[in-house]
Image 1 (cartoon, rainbow, N blue to C red):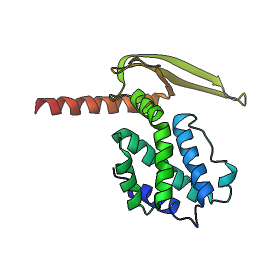
Image 2: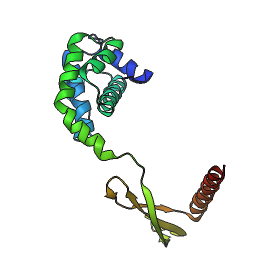
Image 3: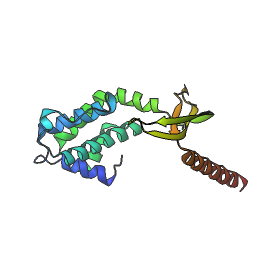
Image 4: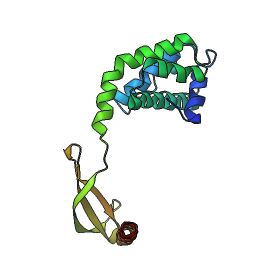
Length: 193
C-alpha cells in the first residue's frame, strides 16, 4: 500500500506526539472514519481537537481519509497497513489504534466502496427547454434566455441513477456542443487507426 507524499506528510505530523497527543489522535481517527462512512459533512469540532491548528488538522484529516480509502480499495491486511504507517514514522501504539479502528469499520467501508461502482455513467437521453428570465431577485428587468438541460443517465453496475440537470446560457450551451463535437471527432479518428 502506497500513499502520496502529501498524505505521508500528514501521517508524519500525526505520528508526532508533541503535535498530536494521544487523545486528539484518537479523535481525528474517529472523525475521519465518521466523515467517510456516516456524514460527509462531519465537522472536526471534537473538543479534543480544539487546540490543533485548523490547517494542520485538515491536512491530517485528509491524510487519514486517504489511508482509510486506499486500505479499503486494496483490501489491505493489517501487515500492509502497519508497514505503510511505519514508513510514515508512526509508533506501534498509534499503528495499533488505527488498525483497530480500521478493523471495526472495514465491512462498512467495503460496502461503501462497492456501492460507488466501477464504470462511469452512460447518457441515454437528453432533454432541454428554454427558460426566459424576465426579472431577477431585485425585480430588475433582465430579459435573459437560458437553457435547462437534463441528461438521462444510467450506470451499468446498478441500473438507474437520478438525472443530471443544469442551466446554461446560449454561449455556454454552444461551447458544450462544440466540445462534444470535438470529442466525437477525436473518438472517430481513434477508432479508424
